[in-house]
Length: 132
Image (cartoon, rainbow, N blue to C red):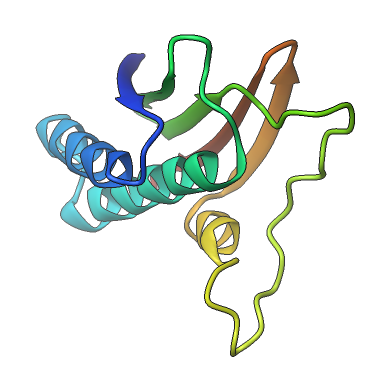
């Protein structure tokens, strides 16, 4: 598993996108799959920046792995401040909404995705199987 530490800033989505694209290209994935993986990574980072706090280091952790069966991408942040954890879901954005499509895109491009919450950290992950 590879991990990239990025700042809790909107510009980090582009950093994650370029890094995942380069790593997946180097791993020999077809261009279409590498582009999908890069988009998943940038959407997950964008959501973490918009909706969550950074980890105590002030950063987000973007992790990925590629194996013969497919790939997994995750972004770990510091979670949402406050006593109640909001539900993280892929909602349907309206035609006039300016935001709200990130997790819908992740859900469409991946075979499975989910959320793991721990004390002080939330990880949103996506897994895609490689076609046989």
